[in-house]
Figure 1 (tube, rainbow over the protein chains, first blue to last red):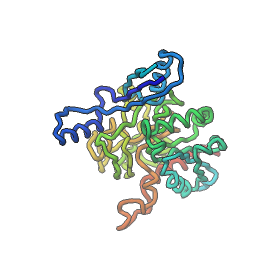
Figure 2: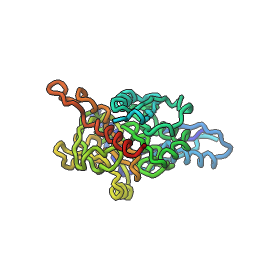
Figure 3: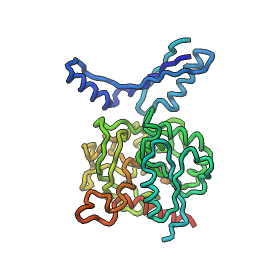
Figure 4: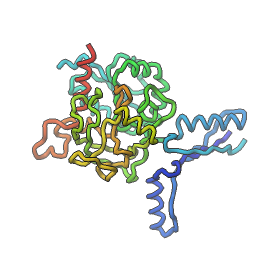
Length: 80
Length: 264
């Protein structure tokens, strides 16, 4: 089953990478106020149910993919 | 000084690049030191050593987050031995990437090995790789890593990292303060608070934090590299009238002093 986990900075946390990207886009003439940069993990997980896939990916985010001090994450199933 | 009876292990994995400098510093102090790759670690017993060092570098290419992959791997694979090592009060030092490893493994600032980290070392505020000399103030000189220093003493030691911005929540920060777990802070050259002022606080760290220890004080992590300020010739002044030694040496001197007083 393919799962998409998106990890990004929590609201209120300064995102230096996003800041630099926004500046660079503005220099190119784009009307960009702000950019937030995150990471997307597309996982191929061996499971039997959607529920199990979501539960395991949640655990993966807690244990490795995100640092709860600064990161939020969202998880979705891409196909079944 | 007979430091020859003390044994240290410097761990390495793909992307580690400060293992040799760290070993040289320890051996210069007389400590018998081995560099051991993660792939060979199972042939060793960690309890044969008085000190474990996680050195600087870019373990596993800094993938996911700097230190995250190595932190989880090493503390999953060697959990039992490391728990015993920590509980016995043996010494563990994380430098730069090694600090990131200890944070991501949940070893700092907690006691024991936590499942999720309580602090983070996030991308520098400048969004740059910061490689420069910084000034540190010793906030706690009662740890095994700072015994040979004075409280309030200012040390000049270099940093080199892209992810060093210390972050945590208010509750954890208060706990760190109460427990005297903040070991080093970035300061102005005259020792006054940097209050976030760049480049003295080079990465935007909360409360100017550069290094912390666990409650017992036997585990310390720091972003600056003491092994890069060990010999006088490593300092920026080396060409004129090179000092005999750098300030980083005091971290290693402290470790020796501690071991001599505590290990028979």
